[in-house]
Image (cartoon, rainbow, N blue to C red):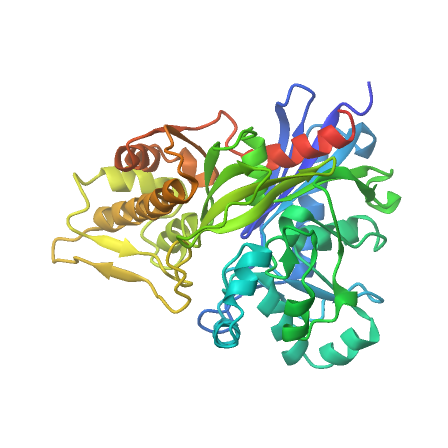
Length: 452
């Protein structure tokens, strides 16, 4: 009766979640822990990679022990992760040389401006499927190499490794034996040619990034290595990896071209399966690799909204007008409408379809009668309005008119938000019983690779 479960790590922007699934795809255990967010300067966002690793290890052990399981009960581990967040570490000591630069961080906006002036927009668009923006890993990595003491010398010496979060977790889980990135995460670096499945030499040269620090790339459902026995008492295959939004697309079973989902997490991300051919957007959307399985690549069209659930956290943590995120729904329903209040939550710039790195948040329509309820309602409505903007241009680019949208992520449990979303889109919004679609996707990918 051993090997009856798959464990999925969902390493997100504000915390790490671990879910354990049985053969029927049911969740038998769930553990979650937040970790520290660092904001050293306006527009800068950082994480401590060691804290991410320690918190992730803690929730894996917690998820196992609370249902009296051990490593020997696991057929495999799948990893899904916050994308674009950039970690550089010393391969000899295993220690990061600085904090991770988070996908939300805007510190490299001026470097992106330089790339545009150098005429690289067409090259970036055609080879990587992306737009030039501080959101992606490329300029974050270049910044670390230029600004962290001794980073350049160590990189030239072959002593540094770069990875996004799945690469960092895989390296630690295997005791430093495996340095890989899957296709879906590599396609978010702004360094990866999504057609030829290789790091793009011209972009590496321009940003002065030595190829020796980059991970090898691989599929999303295969056995990459095994956990070092010291961690869980046995070797467990690590068998699935995908960026969180691609994993959610897989977890929502969006396997046919035209299938689409929207994940309402820290940010909000709409992905549409476009099949085996990338669709290059003329409307500010991204072409990205959805997954690679058994040598076959599936592509997606994506609209990235940087602030969604994070705006609700802002109500809770900074404005302190709610104590828990779930309070936003009854507070929004305490007023008949938004009272003319509108919020643009551009706290870290605007993503698709506008791509304005310098935009900042705005509240408009305040009157003496504006209440906490109006502000809470305006925040939830803003999430839906941003999604509407992206879906309109996605329909134009793909020539597909959606008749339904699959929704997942923590904020999708907010009934007011989901109903308002459905109303302004004029389509059905479908929410799964298990809203952890990212972890579900990682579990499916690992399960396929291990014949689970």
